[in-house]
Structures are given as C-alpha cells and as structure tokens.
Length: 341
Image (cartoon, rainbow, N blue to C red; front, side, top):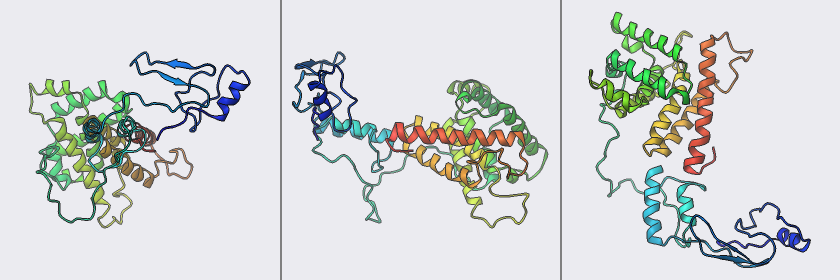
C-alpha cells in the first residue's frame, strides 16, 4: 500500500518558514524531501528515478519493484536459508523486505498444512549426520574420540572461539579431567557421566575451527563437526528423558543436576545451526533452554540470600549461562526471523 508524502506537521513547518521538519511518524513517508520548492532526489548508490514532490504532493514511488517471477525465486531461496517452508517469518525478515519491493499483489506467507494425515509429496530424507542414534549415556560415551583429538579441538575452541561465549577454561579442563580419569579407572562408570556435561563437551568440540580438525586428522581418526553436533543433541534428548523418569528420593541426585551446563552449551548449538541456515531451529532451541534455565532459577541472582551456599564456580557458570541465553534470545529472532524476542 502506498503512503502519502505529506503530513500536517510538515505543512505547519512550511507555513512558518522553518528550515527543518520534525521526525516522521508512521503516517509520514521517510522519502519526504526538504521543505520548500520542488526537490529532485536521486540515490547516489543506485541512480534511482527522480522523485518530485511538493507539499501536499504526490505518492512515493517504489524504485525497481520485483516482478512476481523474480519474487518467487528470491523468496524461495530466502525462506530455505532461514526456515522450513511454512514456518512463519515476521516483519523485518528478508522475506518481508523482498515482498516490500513487489507490487504486493500476491500473498506473502506460505502456511504449514495441518489437515492431512499422509503426505504424498514427501521426499527421501537427507540426514544432517549419519551418527547412529544413542538413547542412553552408556551408548553415547563411546563416541568420544581419543584424548588427543579432544584436547586439540577444545584447545582450538578456547583459543579462537570462546571469546564469544565466556566459558571458564580452567573449570572446564578440571571437569574434563575428572570425567576422563573416571572413565579410565573404573568399570561400568559411563552411565554415571552427566548427560548435560556431554552436551557441553560435544558442543565445544563441534564448534572448534575447521583448521583444528584438519590438523588432528593427520595423526588420529576424527569425525566431522556435524557428527559431534549430533552427539550433543542426542545428549540433550537424554536430559529431557531423565525428567520423565521416576524422581529420585535422594537429594544427592536429581535430573536437574547439570541443567546449567546444557544452558551454557545452547548458544554454541544455536550459532552452529544458524551458520548452516537452520535459523528457525536455533530459535526453538534457545526458547526451550530459557524455560529450562528458569526452572532451575538461573534468572535469580546467584547471590540471592535464600539460596543455599554456592561455590564460586557455580555462581560464575550460572551468570554466564543466563546471559548467554539472554543474548541469543535477542539476536536470533530479531535479526534473522523478524520476530520479537
């Protein structure tokens, strides 16, 4: 719909001889020229057609509108780069910008069909990763690579990537050594490894720079980053399953233990998905993690007087995890999907 380039506020400024106009509102077209005589506007970057306007004047013309065929092609590519067909993309998204360049005579949104139980057009699936499904921690732990690979990937992560996330390196190395010693010196202990910790460990390995994968591949077998990402997601599903089990009667063990670590890993997983065009999945992931974080009180200050005594590491992890989720929940929906956080 076209907007008018005139407004009462502009007219008043003209009549009073003012040299500047007030900021435009939703009713004023942002392409309004300086007040006075007819003015020719030309974009220096694109050489847009001349826009002539007088006070009380003419409609704003959209430069170079897309035709329907061009819009269909570009919007399809844009949709697939952000979300699956039928998933909603809001105002401010790339789809919205493309649609604004058309005559707007065709509908903008596809919708996800819900009325059929069978799809006749479903194509064979191309999996994100070929990792076999693991349903228990005991099945997942053997997917850990040798210590040389783990050290190479995690060291590269902390050297080149961790500045974006602030995961405490000293704490991480101590905790990783604790797990490694337990796996090497005890029998049947793999089932006791915390699944939330595995989410974080595999997420860090998946987020390591590709150069680290290339270096360690010369001396040891290493899977691709997609495989380690899938291991992190499988561990995450296990943490959800733990909450469906009968709660433990002991206060020394709870399905909620380690939830902070899964929240700490979520921004890594979101960025990994976003870099591969799975923006909508990243948004869903961070939304779920925020609910899990609130469920264990991450939204409350660790210095809150009603908490039982927390270690310094626990306080630090809680703060880093909460602010990581807060940041991810702001930029993923707003800057990519055009949705409010």
